Length: 331
Image (tube, rainbow, N blue to C red; front, side, top):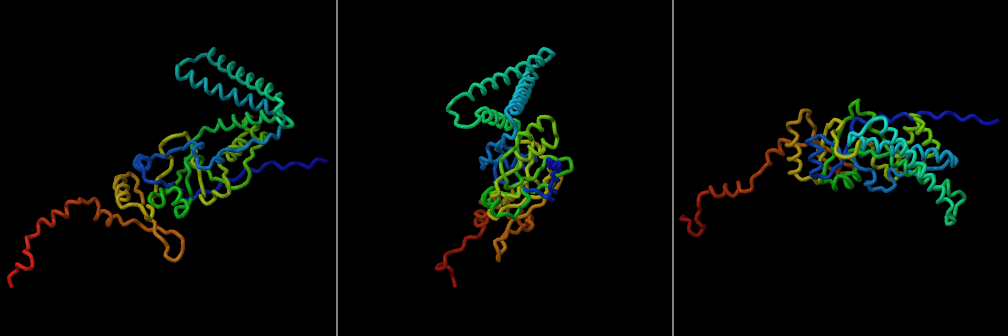
């Protein structure tokens, strides 16, 4: 008797922390991020870990199923590309749609024919070159679907490694955000460890519009990293690539231990007229441990010393009366 397989349980989403943080060095992009309330959604291919968002497809289905998956991927991609091009030149109509669908089928047929031919190459030293080639092409098409951008955040503001790696060795800042209700679905927690495999059967279910399969594939592609990265405690904001209006609410800014006074003054001054006030903090050391702490930034003290005019002190000395040298003074 075959043992029944339990249905997959839906993974419960991690509870969002009260704040998520973005470490930044101070640059023009940082100024834009603060004063225009923008976030930059990076292309995952630019990440410092080349294995990030680069899973491997496991061929747990036969060649026929892989062919069908590849055909679906290619037809959908070509259709989307051609529809976008037709929209740009305002070329629409029933014949246009028919032509686009026909072109997608032709592209898929040609690719499958090429794979069948290349699989006969005797240089392939494997049991089933056809499955190997189909798996490789399906994997490539799968990753092409994920053309989204990612904003990497952390749930920690006191991480020494994060300050060193992403906060310009404490010369930068760390910006804290809260997540409004309408942005919760866009913020996802990264999982660390495990393997990089994505079962082809799961991808097939995704292509059949299985919502749970889609979410599981999303997690495996976009939200899994090596265990060594766990110190980041990362949450990811997923959206269109490039600089976008922030869907989050900026709540606080933490300045690194080596952050220049001029940078602190410029940031505070730039945001003093903001519609929603931001809290300012500065990092400092715990003298007994390696832990990092923070305290409120003394804005009044900052504004007493800055902005300054260097020649002011020269002019102050110019106003002093002339005093004769000691050997001329009368007793």
